[in-house]
Length: 113
Length: 114
Image (cartoon, each protein chain N blue to C red):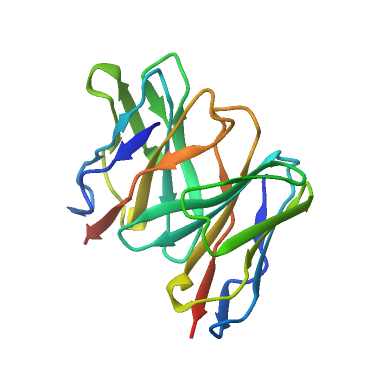
């Protein structure tokens, strides 16, 4: 059974703080994704990684960076958190080839005050 | 580029009634299609997927979906809804040449009346 875990379910940070969201998958998937989910806007892709140290920008990368030093771990970094980054953040993983479903973590609800 | 439209933001059905959630996609070739479900406060879980072959696909929890190429649709159905089906449902489309990325619709929230 594929398992995707995220380091925190709830997180409260202050404006200007550097924030790290961690995601770990245990199925040796090549692909990993970070999305943010906001009411009425669905899932928006922030960054995508298809291999260790490889990354691609998604639809809304501004204000975010990512790190993938090991295949199983994909980190999302908010360099200087702002209130408009208050959201639900979802991590997912999948096999590399097209057409495979994504497996999601439980999400991290981040509040920036 | 592919896109997905879920025309219904919110649907309410009575327990025991049938359900159909609509999904329309835009893509130049035959896509990969998915339906996911998200319970409150949780991540998304795959309900079913279409790659090729039989256009009627069966999924978990008694759900099915039908791929209609002529209508660019992939509607999700269930003959009898249970209260536990209340959740948000997402349709997604993946391209065969897009290295595993998918585009998600905005979601449909299902409320089940007792």
